[in-house]
Amino acid sequence: MYKRIDINADIGEGIENEAELMPHISSCNIACGGHAGNLETMKRVSSLAKKHGVKIGAHPSFPDKENFGRKAVDMPSTALYTSIINQIKDLKRVLDENHLHLHHVKPHGALYNMAAVDEKIAKVIIEVMKALMLRVHLYVPYNSVIAKLAIENKIPIMYEAFTDRNYNSDLTLVSRANENALITDAEVMYNHVYAMVAHEEVKTVSGEFVKIKADTFCVHGDNLDAYALIQSLTKRLKSEGIQII
Image (cartoon, rainbow, N blue to C red; front, side, top):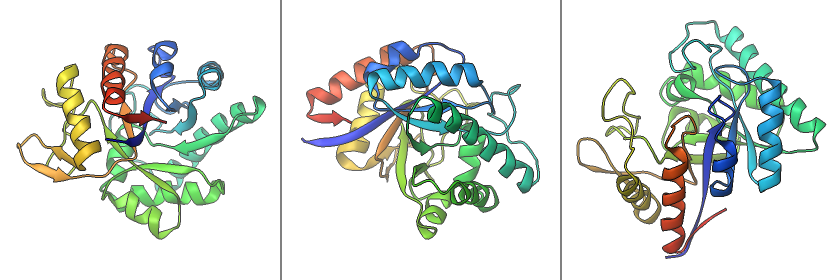
């Protein structure tokens, strides 16, 4: 089988495993101050991305470092808009100073999950993308609210799926509060990703197979086993003729 996919990782989140991950990914999502990260970490990891030829994306979040951006924050749309756009601008300034290109935007954590189903949150992100006037991609879940709004607003998208997360039947991610939220076994992860790449379907926690499309696949960089898992996954995918680009 010959297919080409992108593999991305969330980085700059304090784990400091970026040097290990970079050779095995083709794009990265850099935390830009909302849930983690600061100007120093943005400079450091963007330089690593440049060294390895990895595409760079902004990874904005609800402004909530205490909860690592994984809890919904009740805030006015105008305040959320300002927070997100400022986070992206901070990273963009770092990239501009180093003559680097912003390839995409991928919301983090609760912001990402809520935008998939909540039109109000999704609209805020869409307005940020329009205001930035950058022809960068937005990483979005397949068949989500934010994907539909992005398409309507002619914002380029890449459908994203997760290598290390289990899915519900409605294609939402299983809550991290549940024991079966994460995939931590290399064999299970490979089968999970291969089904999505080769057959455009994902096996949900209820056991049924649901249609899904993905251009890019995420491995969470804050997982302490991320390096071993992504190394095993990319090696097996390449052996099946699947290119990582």
